[in-house]
Image (cartoon, rainbow, N blue to C red; front, side):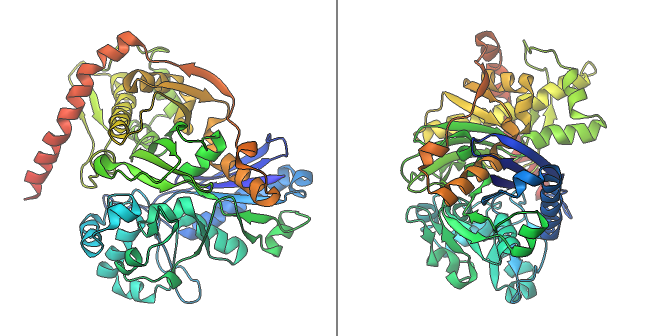
Length: 489
């Protein structure tokens, strides 16, 4: 038996997987994000710990016999967050999250201090990454920065609480802007640009490698006969790829979660920071990936549901089972800024084209289409980076909506494969990494493709109809950017 834990932004999920890779049980514990200022997003690490205990306690209560046989555990987690620890391992401030955009000015400063950062780290400095966050803390919270002795990413902090060891895997570390991504080791120059040293960072391992053992008291709490081995684990997207079997060059998936990701596995480090494309390590050895990100994917629908006071399923139920024509309204999903292709932390979202005849269903459809248009920008940016994507598996909570996936297919031109239990990708991938860490099996033998329930291909007529609103959508960004700049002066 193996346990996979996925520390997401809106929930922590834990799954129990048997030797045949069947999910025996799962539990999810909700999390909330604090936004003390516009564009700021934080969470208290202690809330993650509460969620972990709640999810694991529930699994242990529901499946005591199976939990007793757990041999390995794997962690997946939201990337880029900055957990700052003092000399005694105490948390010094709330974690600044991946979708926090306060560190815009510090991105330019980081690249000024480390001119080779794009070549070595594989990415443009963006405010969501970890390194600029430390420069922001140094400037605005100097006492906190002076007291910082260790910096951990979110899932590495959970591991620290679970094992007492500060260890990080390559895929998560690659999203910090402190990793030499090609060489798979910390970059002394990148760390120095933020006033840090290797001693401040966790040890690095591959995601498939053992990385500590579970604390004895926790093993007893959950009824485990022996202390399970912890795997190196993975950042959330790399764990999703492992869960889908996307471990060979050319394999791809689309994640329709809180944020949106389009991923392509590569057999070498292929940096192409133009257009906001990321180049990171995979969680399996000698493998990398390219990906594009839209910051507000399923979270755009969640925002619209809160705004209307309706549940998401009820909003979706107002749409036709099969969308045959674009909404008359266009939505820009830049609620927390945007990464690919603009790398713009200051831009914000909008509706355009409202009239007296606009209905709530029109606006709901526009939200789904706006996210799809953003994914189309990602598809085109990846093509510019040399990765031509024609099909992808779909994971994340948004994949439960057949309507949304069909819109995505027609807008992006991709054949999209809906999967059984697609929302469990990260946690399931973490469980697979745990198995490899325990058994030493080959990656290809464990990371098999997931069962596909349905393939949705682009509707040619609808795809043609989307050409005009897509062009309008793309014209809105520079106009909105110009207007926001003018307002700020």
